[in-house]
Amino acid sequence: MNSGLDEIQTHRYSRHIMLPEVGEKGQKKLLSSKVLCVGSGGLGSPVIQYLAAAGIGTIGIIDDDKVELSNLQRQVIHGGNIGKPKALSAAAYVEKLNPDVKVLPMEMRLDDGNVRDIIPNYDMVVDCSDNFETRFMVNDACILTDTPLSHGSIFKYEGQVITILPWDGPCYRCIFEQPPPNGMGLTASRIGVLGVLPGVIGAIQATEVVKYLLGIGELLVGRMLYYDSLYMTFDEINIQKNPKCSVCGEES
Image 1 (cartoon, rainbow, N blue to C red):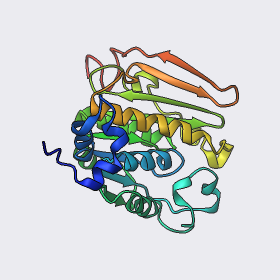
Image 2 (cartoon, rainbow, N blue to C red):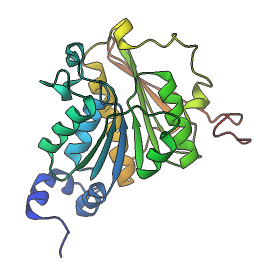
Image 3 (cartoon, rainbow, N blue to C red):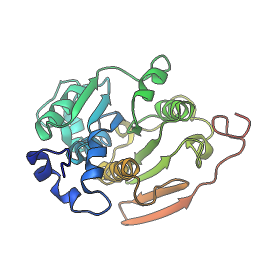
Image 4 (spheres, one colour):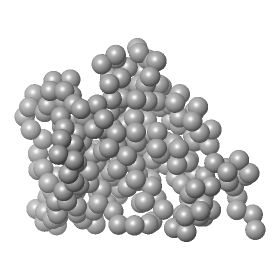
């Protein structure tokens, strides 16, 4: 029976194909899937690397920053590319890692003017941004376009992940109703971050994406996974859907 995978692909993805929950059918599904990564920094680095290795057929990368020396302590996808646009740097990594993947780098900032046009082109979005404005905007656009979303964020030594399926469980605004006042959001450039932390959180986000696309396992829907790297603990926080949520609530 023809699996639709060529000899090289069968060898490349053999460890996936061995898994009963994945198999050839599942791998072909990954190869036909499209995922958008918002940001290619600390979280985006491991997310993009693992999704490309897994054989996600199309990966969109949107980022308007350029690689700086201080990024390399944690943004491991950008080695040797100081001064290069991050979207192009990450795309070059993907192209070398897996020729099966079509990578679409976008050297631009996701904003209110383009978010609703870009997101519907993908099967799932991974929020790897580092600011509240983008997180709320991506959440709202994903709910309104019925696009699944993996949210991840980091803070010094801590990180969190939650998967958002529009209209099926809580969204980001169910947890945090409004972004903090301008200037109150703390980024790595202002407070620092443990370099290995985004590797853990990003890998969990990538895992959630692959599971969703394959339709296997239990997703972090209505469950926020909280990680403390100093004490090496994982805690699960149950999140309830807010019926008064301004985006996904009963009256929205």
